[in-house]
Length: 409
Image 1 (cartoon, rainbow, N blue to C red):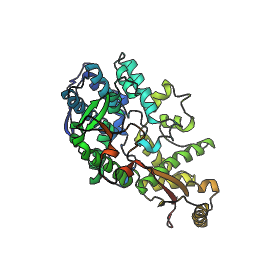
Image 2 (cartoon, rainbow, N blue to C red):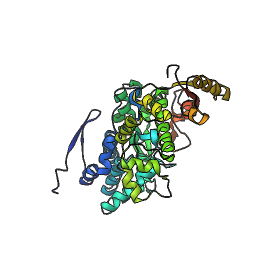
Image 3 (spheres, rainbow, N blue to C red):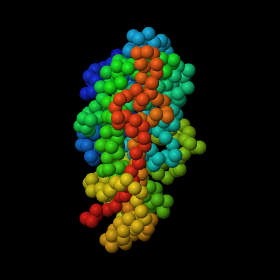
């Protein structure tokens, strides 16, 4: 096939025009592995809470690459040496950092496969693409794994102030309409510098960092950990669990061939080979939604009811508390539901369950954000800031929830 124009421009609603800086980047974007991200939602089922949240991992990957390109320009202007090879490695690493996400992103991370983080699958995809592109992704893989000798390169891709976070906060804020999450990514990028081989923020950018960390906290409580979103995500996980259970009885369920493979085959790190990777690349949100639409008429009450709940947004109720849920509270909810539907304890567990949510905006023990003082001294942002709440952001806030059916279910 004849090569097409590789200097394409994407019109992004957040940043305006995004240009493709290298032909390798164009070829990676054009690959079916990456095109699949057009069919993977960035925020799972959050559109059930925020109707505008229909953007995809494809959007996010391009936005992150655009910010990385800007960061490279800023650091070079300040005298930081970044070779052409390192530039290409950074752009490829950030472009592909989420390529291993499964359908509905984080919602099904441990449902399609068992005990495998999306970053593990992203690395498998990158290694396969590296083989197909004659080793062009070797530096990108080194950076993605955090093994590059220039520490700041690794931090730009995966750190507490990386291009991934700068994009998803601004993008998710835009599409959800939650203004509190909007960060000034341009300002933050211009404040970046490198000292002793690590990424730092110049002192005059400290208020932008404070805003960034507070925005992250707000977005987690208001959006990513929104109680309705949690219910929808948990129902989706339980739909897959029930589907696997139904299939084990010998019953039949209609779905795509690739999806059926993962429903009937236990996949973990021990058997995730090339064939499994190819099958994984063929499933996306469309497979899941099509299956759920079919399964809402299943003769299995639990499966059909769960599917109806998600499709019709007739979700479970949820209560979030500061203290763990007691067994007595769980029993009371189960007894009320049993009056309407005489289910077994195992079946009841799909409709009445508990869980834990945690929020930590800044991890002061892992890849600190350092502020470069005018004196040349490096200070952790939590200590450099005069914002009273910033130190509190480094503490983990834990809450507990219980989900149970509404009276009308």
